[in-house]
Length: 202
View (spheres, rainbow, N blue to C red):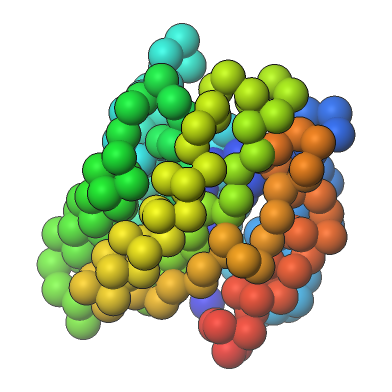
């Protein structure tokens, strides 16, 4: 099977300790590849600052909607795992939880349009954003978004159900680094990869 992991910096594997990329065996798509074995291809498509709705200032075009299509064209995909929404929570965007979820809904509709019907569409797994801690360098960036992040889960679950997607609620499952606020330690990546593998049942 060909499995696309499409997300932001936590899919990319940014370390909360030094800001560098974690090695493949410590970030969840790489761990998932090890768990599934060589008969399955896990395609890592994480990008820091990737969004669902608005492009981040000064970072160029990071819209998930634009960057997903080339992967759909390049690979015959069996499964698409989407982990997006955390960057959309940034205070400067002033988005409601529903607006962010609407961005996810639009992305899923575009995937459906690309494949033409649900009969040919790959299986889709939605990973919700986790908790967000407005601390350190993210204290201002994510100021006041903790409740919004929690509310987002309900909207994501509704979108996943409506769009016939699998859903993993990462909010109670995974916690980012308490000191850094956003990114996962390797142990959290391991937990997430194990949860995804169990859901995929392959």
